[in-house]
Length: 117
Length: 112
Image 1 (tube, rainbow over the protein chains, first blue to last red):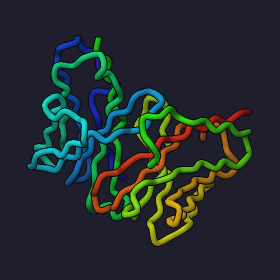
Image 2 (cartoon, rainbow over the protein chains, first blue to last red):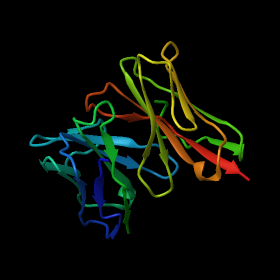
Image 3 (spheres, each protein chain N blue to C red):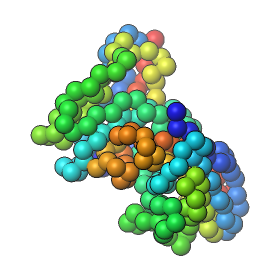
């Protein structure tokens, strides 16, 4: 089945630095990728939708200059958290959509736990 | 889905009992719905899905019911096992690669 690899699984960074998270579709081409953020004991909140070769569409309230998304190929999307602060500490999850996957084409990565100290 | 940002409600069931997890969705234009299971520290895992032209779909030990009139979904788990302990989310979409919106989620705890 479709597999999405997300890396790193866990990262600790200092306040003010930037962190890049990668999301790769391993055995399919993803026309669309999604980035979610999840705080403890809460639901997944969509941050942005990215389509290969075009600018990402951010959800209301998400700072596009802080959360940089690049979808340079059909198998790779990256999320860069710039100038990270402790309040950015969260669980970040990507999802990739496989247009050949029929109704169910959404595959999720295993998530990245970001801790900003 | 329901209002996000709220803390998870909890459902506790005895092992072997049936579990029913409910979800209210918000977008009347949504035509595809998915139930996910999420274990601690992991990404969501697909359980079962249903399209808006159906009102019931069954899988192995799981059944999803859809009531479009009141915009309500439920997930029924038969003979609940300890391995079913997790957080369960419903998600809605208009399909075709459009965004998935997640509901609040329910923490299922299975007691021995």
